[in-house]
Amino acid sequence: VLWNFADDMVVSREQSANTDGTGLLDTLIAAKNNGNLSETELRYMILVLFIGGYDTSKNMLTLTVHMLLQYPEYWQRCAEDLGFCRKIIDEMLRHSTISTVFRNVKEEFEYDGLRFPKDALITFATPLANRDPAAFPEPMKFDPERVNDNHHVAFGRGVHICPGQFLARVQLEEGLHLVAQRIHNPRLNGDIGWRPFLGAWGLSTLPITFDTA
Image (cartoon, rainbow, N blue to C red):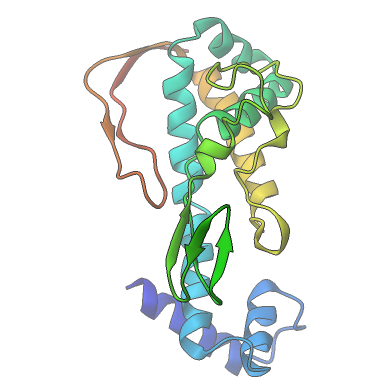
């Protein structure tokens, strides 16, 4: 279903005369036409962007609610202070980021005494990097007032940095602010479930009870 959605979107845009060529989809189609993406890669890229804009933010917001069940004073403050929500989200992105990055080795290389052969699949444990004690004092502690909480690598770095990071931040900050206004005194009400670690990690279930606004 998703493949057909992406395929129809590409074909429709390529046949349309009502475009100025500056949109993201137009840019991706131009990259395909220039030989930088295949037809298959183009459609997979659209699927990644489509799913990434939902699944990752959903998981991150659920993890944030789960964390704040342990800090009712933070929850109440989130309902009153959007600026504090920004601190909460940045610290959550550092403390419990949900993305796991995969890369294929293009050319064999050696790093820190380990040899990585060509075509090997490497998984980068981004959450562990965000808990490096050399970068973050008391890294296991959840501290929204941490002075360098936005130095995390939850959105990647360099040419592979997440293109939707600014939209994701706004979604998470505004979402947390609104949910905290509508749900008072949330409490855990059953067993939580976890998704597999690799990929978009997070909670599969978070049963809570709460007082309505």
